[in-house]
Image 1 (cartoon, rainbow, N blue to C red):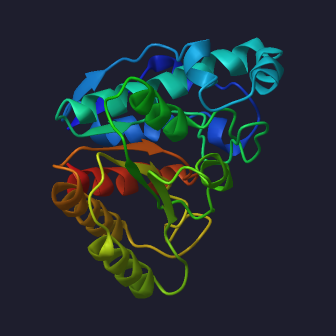
Image 2: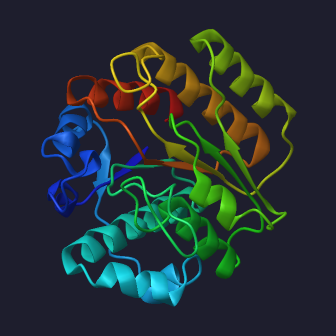
Image 3: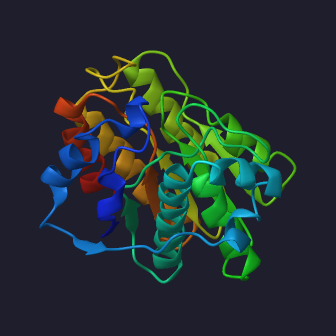
Length: 250
């Protein structure tokens, strides 16, 4: 397992909850020293334009600090995806999140769609022809869904709601019914957690989810898999939830 992280992700670039001080630190305290850390470079404009309109990119550029961190987050997702196709499982401890960012707009603390940029980048350089994107965040990734709505070779799946046992069972059933992709990408949000906004999943549930996704990737795409951070806002449990997921996913 490789961890993709940059010290600039700790910067407080806006007043929204995703940028709160201490959020990245809570995660890194749980995992630092146990995994190889790799530092990404920012995504280039030619990477962002694979997913977003030029006008959208220009709007984000009007706030230089946000643009810099958002481009670095997209670059972190690209590095995770590249590691995955080379045979290394990867997790991106990055921010801002991305799954609410669409071609022309963004909301929900997102600016660029990190997972979409990474998948489109791999497709553009012919490293993959198909992808399965699984989103375990509390909130539906409307940006990711819209970007790939008419792309038959990419499937977006958002983990369903309901009782925690039903959520786990439904995810397992979905994965069991899927067949052959080139890569598995995970939008890993942790705001479903029992002590987070969703009030649903236990810490150990994230390990179960990580293991399900690992097993599915080994069956569907030769183990090629990566995940990047989306939501999760209670700093007292966020790091533990992330660590639990990584322990199952690695």
